[in-house]
Figure 1: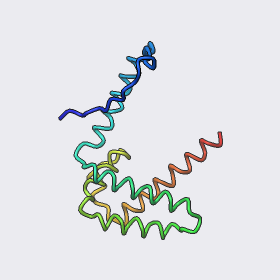
Figure 2: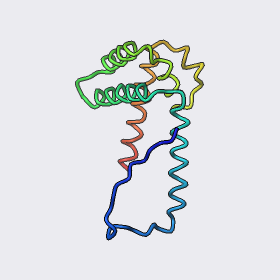
Figure 3: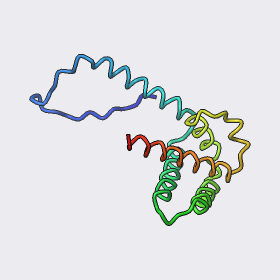
Figure 4: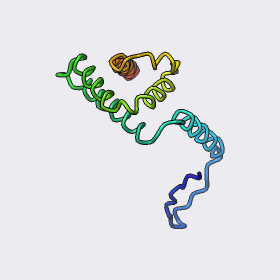
Length: 134
């Protein structure tokens, strides 16, 4: 199935000659698209979006000073339980993102997945803060 790319009409006076490194940028873009396609293979857009929202909510709760780790874990556990039908998709995406064996991920209970997700988010946040201080 072909992907349709929207075309934005521009006046002739706004046309630009592409830079010399355009082929290199195009190759880099295609490689990135291929990497994303491989990451998302076997999942649905709905499943990816729900997981993205679960992660986003956990990040927002981490930023809120009043939310403790047990509260965040409880919320993550409840949301993962709510979308239990998508658990296989979530595990597939998370195992690919974290480069962890899917079979090992399947052995984890929902609370274990929630704990691992929170731990990874905290680690990413710590790394991001450390990099910004440099």
